[in-house]
Amino acid sequence: MQKPIAGVGVLLSVVIMLSGCTTGPIKMNSVAFIDPSLQSLAGQAISVETTTSRLTPTGTVEAIAVLKNQTNYPLQVEGRVQFFDAQEIPIDGPTAWQRLHLNPNGVETFRGYSSKVEGIQHFYIELREGR
Image (cartoon, rainbow, N blue to C red; front, side, top):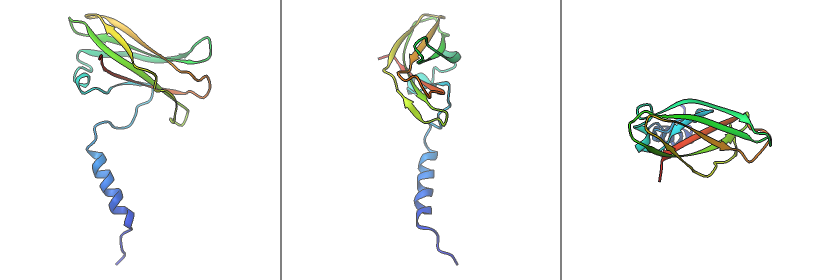
C-alpha cells in the first residue's frame, strides 16, 4: 500500500475552501459587479450593454463599458480597471475609483485609461456601489 503524498491533504483542503468562494476566475475584457449590493442589481437595475478597448492618440489603452440604468431612479456606481498582458498577467492598474452617475433609464459610459503603452492585451473592469 502506498503512502499518500504529504501535500495532497493540504491541497485538498485548499480546494475545498476555495470551492466555497463566489468570486471565480477573472473573465478578461468584461465588467464585474464586486459589491454585494450591486451584484443583486446586475442585469436587473444595471446592465452592461457593451465592453471594448482602443488605443488613445498617446498610445495608452482606453477600456470602455457602456452601462444602462434600467430603473426609474438615479444610480451611482464607482468603477476601476486593471490591464493585463497576453498571458493574462496584471501589468497596469488597478486605476483609482471613478464615480459614475446613471440617470433614470439612462445610458452612461465608463472609461478607464492605462498608464503603460506597451504589452496591454486585456482589461478587467470592476464596479461597486458609489460611496
